[in-house]
Length: 377
Ligand code: PLP
Image (tube, rainbow, N blue to C red):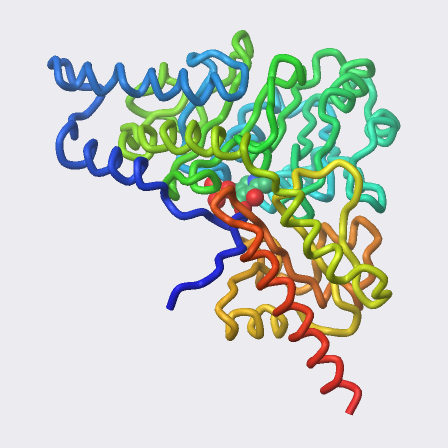
């Protein structure tokens, strides 16, 4: 069965050219990049080229990129290595992805002073709220760039300024997974120290990520071993993943620059405009790639199953945490339990089109109207 796929924040289809490159490095240039012979040195050179390509999208340089096994690893890397001597307090938001939030909870359980900042009702972290929590002992801050739940974009540049004013030596990490290739990003302009990205959200393979680490920020290695990647992250590089990541990211970034995600998002907004039992979560600055819709008194999983029966795949929230009933992020924005339980997440890629969005919005209206009629009987 062919589906209308609207769960691109969970994962994307591997692009054709990325798949081709992946196969090439699996079958032809399969050499270990740490070996000393010429074909292996060529692979090593190509890995550097990929690092330059990924870095270029972020306004960084190739030496500032560490390839990882996924963004979850990048985030764990940032937390484990970024908190020097385990001294000082840590600030994270409650709208973080689980791979950041759980790192913070782990630090808290070890007795570290972890301070949580909530987003406002529009789904944004306010610089003044961060400033109120930070002090001269703030050692590490992690704030998501673009929400995987609502698509809202945080003003990282202003947030960084607010933190550094209080604690100039604080290390600032940003989870950029849902922003990467979608929102033009210059890590130097943002003033951050670390930035996490993932390949499978932009047409690359699952199991490949990267962490930007600002030059001069000398962190200990997260994984010890054979000294690969200048001893910053040991382990034989995932050559197929890395090579296809660079191709996919460049392609995605180019496609994104000609894609109006807001046009598709607006189709859903207009479909439910004026219905007081429907809530669009997150407003103001957003990527357009994600829309979180809540239906009062309905259940997200039943709506999603109804959509699937009509050949449309949507998400329930973060794919990694669909088993968690109450939605932490929506709750932290002040969305009531009655609305939050009836939430679905629709997320686009540049491969989606207006016709798909219209079909999906019509289907969503039909399903939720039917469910309401059934409930009122
Ligand atoms: N951070 C955000 C914002 C995400 O959306 C995700 C995946 O959903 C991750 C981190 C984890 O990425 P990965 O699947 O590469 O570990």
